[in-house]
Amino acid sequence: MKKSLSGSNGFVGAAYALGAFLLWGLLPIYWKAFGATPAIEIFSHRVVWSLVFLMAVLFLQRKWHFFLLIFQDRKSLKTLTLTALIICINWITYIWAVNSGHIIETSLGYFITPLMNVLLGVFLLKEKLNFIQKLAVLLAFIGVARFVLGFGDLPWIGLLLSFSFASYGYLRKIVAVESLVALTYETIIITPFCLIYIGYLLITGQSTFLSDHHFDILFLGTGVATAIPLVWFACAARKLKLSTLAFFQYLAPSCQLAVGVFIYHESFTTNYFITFSFIWSALIIYTYDSINTQRKRRLI
Image 1 (cartoon, rainbow, N blue to C red):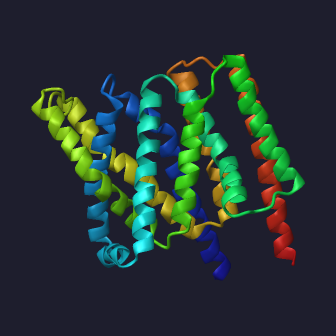
Image 2: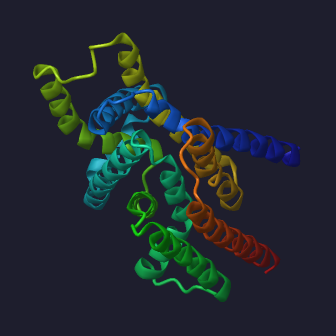
């Protein structure tokens, strides 16, 4: 009976993880639907409507008392205020990059993220790397360096996305607050600034919102598009082992890459191929080492 329940949880967890990462991977299609709408306007609506959706979910799940507990811990308040700023940088960069024809570079950023997590562990937690992990990081570094040499430009979009997301993940890990509750606080912090900006656009007649019913529906849907994969990811995290969940994380950037190349026909040059080859090799080596390490721990 226990095995059956465990198998059921694993299947449900995998379904949630698959849904979450697929939605994240296909999100560029949603942002592209806004056309020439400025990224900052899309971002502002994303924050406001996400807050509305998150507050509704908290109310339905009766988790308001968890939200209020945040205000009793100054350390949590400071950390979540910082993560709110970081997620601002990540969301604005991502939306701008997608709508400016840089979907492939965004996928590069999210492929690099797991390795960026490793570097943060080394510098912030003083973690030691074994030979295989050092090799993976070296390959990723060579891949980025090859990109710079090939294009003569730093892949700042990918690096900024990976660094901001890895930093966000690190800070959220050290705060003992549920992801849904924490995101609600983060959006509350940002919302006043977003409302001021939306109001300014409406007053000056520069707003895309309320000028076209098609865009109005898209704006309203930004909250659902943001929150649903996050809720599904949280459900998956509770039902799956971390090692199993790690495999799914590569699905989102893989989908982004496919969307950029096959739907929006972004140029996947030889230089991109060489850079991605180094990154993919690094990820394969790093994943193999992670699985091998976990197997050894189970035997101890």
